[in-house]
Picture 1 (tube, one colour):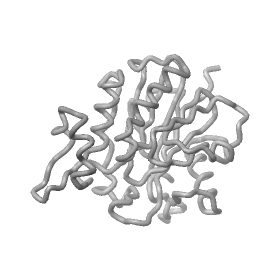
Picture 2 (cartoon, one colour; picture 1 turned 180 degrees about the horizontal axis):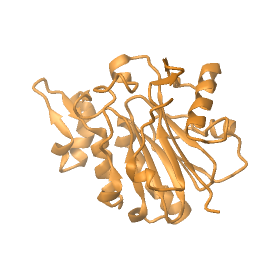
Picture 3 (cartoon, helix red, strand yellow; picture 1 turned 45 degrees about the horizontal axis):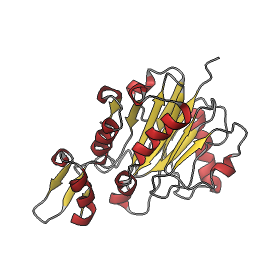
Picture 4 (tube, one colour; picture 1 turned 30 degrees about the vertical axis):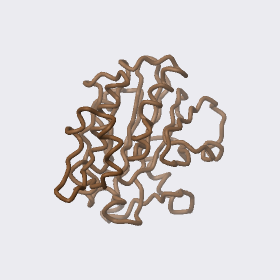
Length: 257
């Protein structure tokens, strides 16, 4: 049994499958680590990949994912015949597609996994939004790719964020916080200064604001996912643990036919 994290507003979309893996799953009453490594590959990764896909009732052996590099590059998956291994060569931090039965995925362990769905154009996408990617506007770039490649209107997009480190736990130095302070006049909503001249950043809230600025309706944005540090017993956290596993966030379109 796998207790996946899912987003209610996206669960209502009958033609979209989505979910984020936990750090444990249960087999015959025994709890086992659900482990995905950052680099991927390997027998354990492939085994858990199959278990995860099966839990979502997806009849595929592998999902499509890119090499994540904390960039603002977006991979547009348009070729239905492309191999998983070919997609795995692209360096990007977002992936979008219109292809049904084509599971796409991102790996995270504190960074914000963002699932986007356009129910009008029937297109989905995933974003890996860490501090550097967020600073480089990876979410805006992805929304622009939806519009450019598929004619999506931002106001039609539905967006949800999975487990990620939140403002209660994500402490950074001044140089890391300064780009966001300079960029947003309302930064006090997601940046809190401490007495030690450190700052707490709330990346989900920053991405929520960025989504609104890019044209997504605020009522279509879910940004209240759990904190990976506060709930480390459920989710992997690089900030708290150092070397650790990764969570998989997956999205897949089902055919309209």
